[in-house]
Image (cartoon, rainbow, N blue to C red; front, side, top):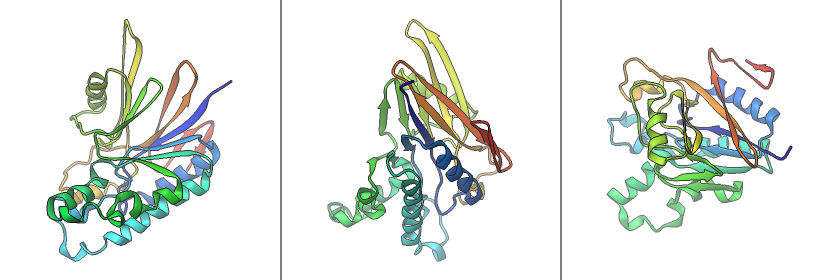
Length: 246
């Protein structure tokens, strides 16, 4: 049967990525051998240039975080040398552009300060979708980082479905969730795609109870349809394709 396989991941927030969970993810990617890898934003946190209060002792580590992000992307490329890989900036990676525009707009045209240049995306053969509002349409499915966060799981997915009018999968909320609708246009769905960060990150944002979930999705694209399979990771374990990863 003619189809393509894809994996969708997001919100690693390096250097706050959950190392154990991402190692399991790499194992799955190696087994699954996707044709497409969509990274829906916030692979790096860039907390040093956020608007929030940050520890001044840690403001000089941004190059180290960029290097770790490049290493993370390099691992994906090594595992899948022929896959199409696309990176969405999301609101956290987009902090760099906003910071330069806000505080040093004269430097905005310097190529070496470009996000793609800093992460070595051209050498890795990875395309970039800038800012959190950017999106990719693959057939009848929209992929985006997103800017909406509702209180409960699945509610953001519902709002995103109404916003685009097409099926959509998004990051940003750090939750898993889904919603479906059937009308004269057929069946459409929307999915919130979990996160891959350590929940200790919540302390940086002054969050009380951390209502997040870790996981990812894998997708089959057929000529006439697509199938989204959500894969939550609970207690550092998940089962996919008949195999348990732990």
